[in-house]
Amino acid sequence: MSATAPAAGSHPRPARSVLISGASIAGPALAHWLHRYGFTVTVVERAPELRTGGYKVDIRGAAVEVAERMGILEDIQRASTDMQTGAYVDGEGKRIATLPADIFGARIGRDDEIMRGDLARILYDRTRSDVEYLFGDSIAAIGPATAEGVEVTFERGAPRRFDIVVGADGVHSNVRRLAFGPEERFARHLGSYISVFSLPNELGLDREELYHALPNRLICEYSSAGDPTAKGMMSFRALRTAYDHRDKEQQLALLAAQFEGSGGWNVPRLLQAARRAPDFYFDGLQLIEMDRWSSGRVVLLGDAAHCASPASGQGTGMALVGAYVLAGELAAADGDPTVAFDRYEKEMRGYVTANHRLAEKFVTEMNVSTRGQIRRRHLMLRILPHMPWKKLVAKKIAEEVQRGANAITLKDYAAVPGRGSARDHAAARPAPEAVRPGPQGARTSAVAPPPPYAA
Image (cartoon, rainbow, N blue to C red; front, side, top):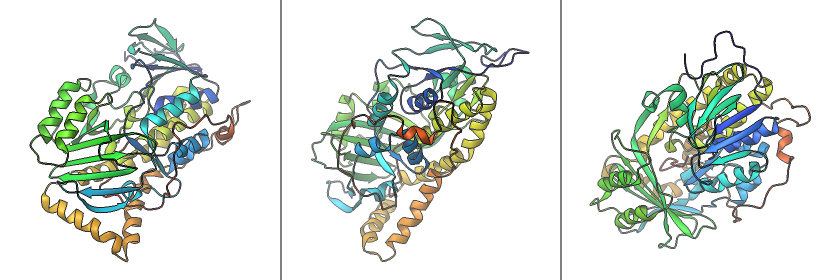
């Protein structure tokens, strides 16, 4: 019998207690909504404390509406990266072409950009008084599903029973491995790797991002509003390589092998900074593709279910939207996991597929193969601001990104007695103090050379 299949003849009772694995974005967002709908929520996180590092992430389309319904949109706006310009540079660091930063991010209207760690802090601050957080622990085993729930064994804590277990623990999901099988069954490598890390802002960047392209490689350095440090990003094309996703030294060696001796701008400094960074991140760009996101009383959310890779620029938005839909369907089904999980998948499938296709397109444009392609890109960026048709080009590229960002129609889930509907929640409690105040830039332009690389 599957570790998550209901016992023969059992009939699941309505869920009221929910265990969520993962305290990044999807997990706390789901915890927010489930608490509002009257569920008792526990979040378990392997890290000893909230992880506030990471790169900048976009909030677009349907995710903006979800953030507004959650009551955190103003928090996001106050903590905006407020990026002003983006430029390509040559091997000496000389700017070849400079454009408004939103051209690199395909943001329009109320779309915004925020550091992943700032968004994690906003969500944690909104939920920590209502939700049980267990830091420094992880799920070791998930017992068979019965009509009474699921017995969960922890690596450190005592076993406990929950009505539902949610894997919101990222692309290398532990819950997915325990309940559905090894990662290799569901991960499709897109042919590139990415690394992001903090470093001293020795270039004096002020809300600016600089890109340097090499054949099959891309380098970026940027600084966002209110952050005295900078972020480095290094990406390269490569076939799938076996490595331990928790072994920093192994990952640093892979990164160095691709960039040492390349002659690229700032490479020695960036590799040195990567070694020293406390928030070093390295991973392959891959899609998680599954026929089902649930089994019995276990369900997956966010990257654990359907990672679209950082190449899509949609991972964070998909996490927020998925949390909204899953919680809403559980409330609408009065806690019946069988009904709720089926409806959750039906609501989300088209949205996920659209953004997977977006990732497949953008990953091919992220690391171009030849110096000739790089020269053509530079030429396009130089002439674009001076062309009478520049707005049409920007609109066309933005429309593609926005189709993915808006490829779902959000339900307004029915009111829960005494708690109100999803729309009512936006004003349910005052916003906490902003994570990091900063000036707001206009969000109007809309082309992405290179494509979005933030999740």
